[in-house]
Amino acid sequence: MRASGVTSVPRTDRVIKWLVDGDPAIRWQVLRDLAGAAESTVERERRKSSARWLGGARLLAKQDPEGTWAGGLSSDGGLYSPKWISTTYTMLLLRDFGLPAMNRQARRACTLLLDGGFQRDGGLNYGVWAKWTGGSETCVTGMGLSILSSSSMLTTRLDTIASHLLEQQMPDGGWNCRRPHGATHASVHTTISVLEGCGSTNCTVGANSGKCGPHSNADGSSCWYTGFFRSHRTGEIIKPAFIRFSFPPRWHYDICAPLDYFQAVNAACDPRMADAIDVVRNSQRKDGRWPLQHSHKGKTYFELEHVGAPSRWNTLRALRVINWWERGTVTRPR
Image (cartoon, rainbow, N blue to C red; front, side, top):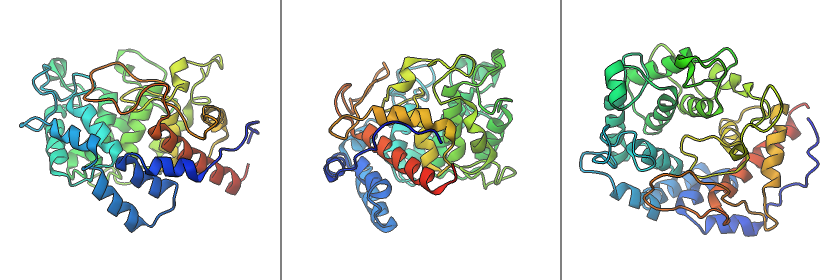
């Protein structure tokens, strides 16, 4: 493993206290990922906080009587658009908050997303074009599978969706929603959406049992990109936004997203991740916190955090990534 040449991350009680004193939707994750709390304590805090937290409650209060969000503002009935207040993107945020799987409002929305988006090819897509063609979109399908799995939807259609995603995997190990239009190289945006979808389900319903999930081939092939943010052809940074951390990420990619995914599934630390880890470490401020460096333009119900200010969400994600990396690089052969 290449030496990073940067100082280790300070884990002060002050930073942990700052995280715990913030949003209850963050608190249960701090207890689980940074404080080593008992599973029963974590689950109790999660159930107590995620739906009642001001942001989660405000989002749930915005749900339409029909079960969608922003249902009257788009041609697809609010299932996917407008961004970022539609049913899909609201449910992605509630997933990140840790909304309990059996929440009635979430499960109602999931039923609508599944019934309204399931296409003839086995994937998901929304809107007029999807209705005409019966064709799915890989990014949408990955995000949808993650949402549906987080609400513990038990239906053979989830297995069909997972099977469809596995069939779309490209020779370089990733995915690209532009593949039907001639793309020959995987996209980081599409790949992280698919990995999060596949990693959230064990596909135990039908024929794909064991083929999809956090320790499947779909996960193991995900180190196809060089350094997470550099071109495999030139070694240059693909896009500056890839090394600026946003939250919520929506469908967009930055390097914190795949690193957070790998720590969540406890993947093996790969030397090709070292450059990305250095970026995370070097983005930390002197006070031990990480800022919100970027946000994605679109409609929102409210702002979680402000660009340039210390970010509890980015600090939480960065600290648990560094914890995972340091555990792995110490305990695994270099």
